[in-house]
Length: 270
Image (tube, rainbow, N blue to C red; front, side):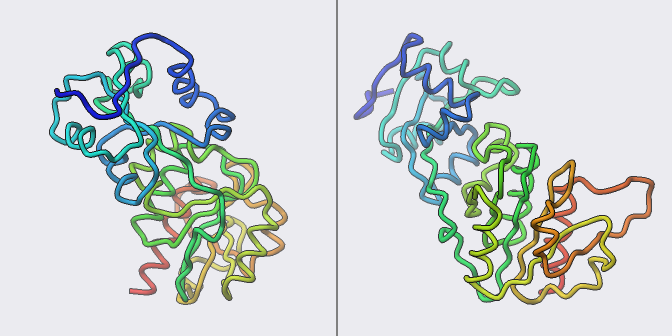
């Protein structure tokens, strides 16, 4: 492969490599630097397609796919860095073979105005979610079902954890998703932005999902996987709905419940 403009080399575990390595495991480092690692054809393509800033592309040379060669040659990143194969392997997803390319991607600002609500838009509010995998899977459903945006309220799983990124399969980049420290900030935004109906999900609700009309602007509040919705959201939701079950399970997984609710919204509006 010919030499790439602005290509640098890292062949030992220097401070720069250790910084990238910390992005895999250290939430505080990701937040402090405003960066995270992304690998896989679809996730990287989605990040580029939705105009996320690619700080760097990391590779080990000998690029076999035309996709990787085109990205490295295409100046989609601020810089390109060639690593030794051993170092690239250390940054790769442990469940897969060594990545051909890894992107260092900048995190956007946590600004609720990034979510542009349609007149009858749909927003999902995740109340203190615990599992990064659940957050990523919910983003896939939100993307597939045309949600305007997702808000993660309170202390929660990290949006940019590698498990979140992997589970989203690229949907993280397609659905505007914002972290908010306090639920009150989210509620104020929802109340002042548009006349949204806040619908909470609860196994104890009286109204079932099929009886509620979802044709107007809706914010779906999904509670914590262990404790459900906080008292703040229970007190401030306009209504709560339940999903009928016929088996012996006590409840649905939070992501499954949210996905069923979003599908019902889509069905009613079809």
